Amino acid sequence: MKIYSVYDKEFAPYGKVLEGYDVSCLLKAMKAIPLPEEATAYEPSITGLEATCTYGDLQNRAFGGMPVQLGMCWGHNTKLNCLEYHRDSEMNVGTDDFVLLLAKAEDIVDKKLDTSKVKAFKVPAGVLVEVYATTLHYAPCHTNAADGFRVAVVLPRGTNTDKPVFEARNFEDTLLTARNKWLIAHAESSEAKNGAYVGLVGENIDIA
Image (cartoon, rainbow, N blue to C red; front, side, top):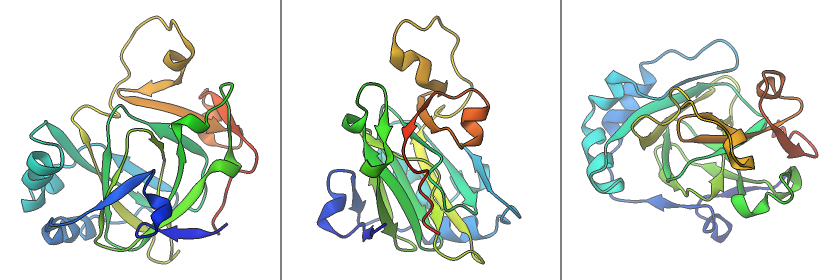
């Protein structure tokens, strides 16, 4: 599939590049965290990252003073597997180039999303991007298997933690898999095997 840049006009419906942020101290702290040998790891909130000079800037400027968490997704990945969304934007920045596989919430039709609607966008190392709340996304993909990826994930505090307990009363309620996390899975994914709703139809995209 074609891989666009986040600087291409095609990225505009999905998010934007954020300028004027010093992420150098954050990137240094991220690089100090070892990569998992296989697959990916994710932590919603990492104390060492939230102690960096970047954290306050992201909370006060990028999120307008709202309480946020600064975590990381890191490891090795080339596949789509799932798509998720939140009720708000997500900020990402990586220590190395990485690729985001994205779709629009409006692409979900009759409770399904055809993976042919998914577009790929390369994010250069050190470039901070905002992914809009209406954009479906999931784990980043590496561009170099040896280096893997380390991508900071900034979200409102509490996101991706324990799922609230309630009685589902509509279709969207059934997609909630964690706090502020609605997810649709591909049948080939481990998430689907663990009971996530299978809503991605078509090829399970693999950028490799």
